[in-house]
Length: 86
Image (tube, rainbow, N blue to C red; front, top):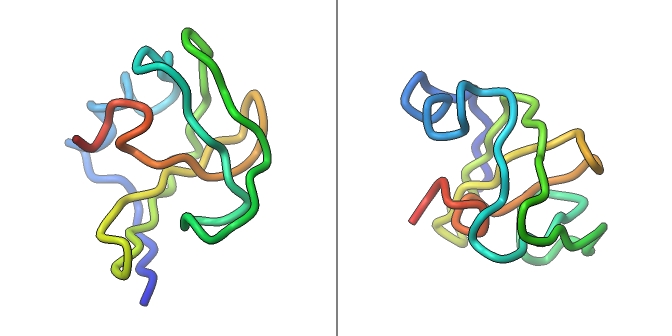
């Protein structure tokens, strides 16, 4: 079951104050929903700046957290792909 929650203060600090973060780990896949089974909207490359909405969803089946972004495209990114969850 998917659980939606607001970001904690600790999570917000991990994404550079809760507003923007530069992808420095290679690339990140943006999906239409918070899970690997959702369609890919776009792949963001190294040094792309993403803007977070402050919404994170923990996908219990996958054991991973997905973060909602609204720039440069709207969708969900896996925390591990953007250096938040390791």
